[in-house]
Length: 202
Image (cartoon, one colour):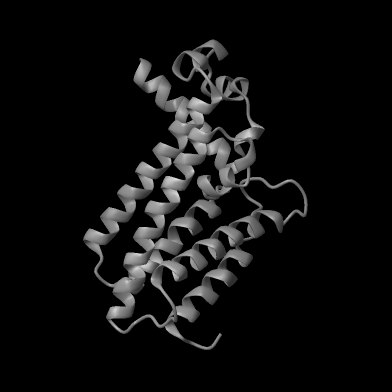
């Protein structure tokens, strides 16, 4: 079935981007994993840039769904923030880091269409984080100087950087795989961010 095969290709591409990078895999890699011919991958996604756009859009759709669901079900801003951190922690524990973070490191090799999708993701993502921060500050739970937009930018940069460090300082001191990402670096940064928001000494 076209829909089922197309989705398998897309989900495989997303996993390969998150565990390796956008530029590190070929259509042959996807074909081998999905157990189809390379021509079938081209049939569903005529160019890798088309697949790249679809991957960012799919990732954004998933993240937006999770964030909207969280906002509807959890009114405590601190718990919402903890689950925000948990989203990245869960991916990292499975050897996967943020898709848009990975692709942003390759920005100069990407088409303008993919670059625009990445910018759109970060704009929406920042708005969601700003909502948590302002809710927490209004309720007297979070303390920080400056605008919520600037704080969201700082937190986003710190988290994305922590994910990269966790990959760089993998436990084997060699090529990373799904079992070697060093969670310690991520947890140390996450703790610093939370303590900073709560104005707690570290």
